Image 1 (cartoon, rainbow, N blue to C red):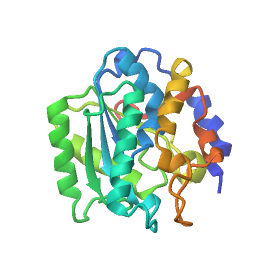
Image 2 (image 1 turned 90 degrees about the vertical axis):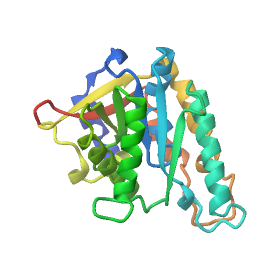
Image 3 (image 1 turned 180 degrees about the vertical axis):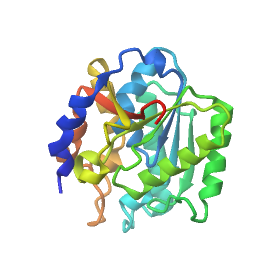
Image 4 (image 1 turned 135 degrees about the vertical axis):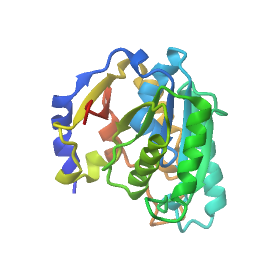
Length: 251
């Protein structure tokens, strides 16, 4: 489809620089799968850690549908591999590997509103936010074209609704560039676009992405149906900035 590639400039043209990362502060990064944290906001995570802000990552799904037919890496082994890769990526970004949580919902079956398991997922997140008290929560854009990404946003929204004190919410982009349609794009009348420069940490961010070897290499080579982040797909993230979307005040 490649719609999003041709629309990148639209969001960049709308973006305002977010130069003071103190306005983000401590952060909870909600990643539907291991690798989304590095792809969507790895550079920002690295810079927050340089400023000594606490960053905690919560991985919503187990990520096991990237190689559903691998005999060498059945679901449990693949889940363990992806969790190990996530910890290594976080370590590269300056986040202690033990400051992460794995919810282990089934990949591509993260529950949405009204589906069994949704309330439990919300409770898990409410408990985590209550414990950590982050200043900002990161989650994929509400219309990012992947079912687990949209479901994760719904879980975050309901969790925040239940909290008396709500952290700031910033939404990051993963699949909008490659698979998005016009209907998936943010409406500038309702949404602010922020741009965080990551020039100084691009190498660090790229090493974090590369730590997800099962996703960016053919480490697992016995599943022809496997998902693979090809160099062509990764070009969408090879930019010296990260974009975040935020509801305009009084929306």
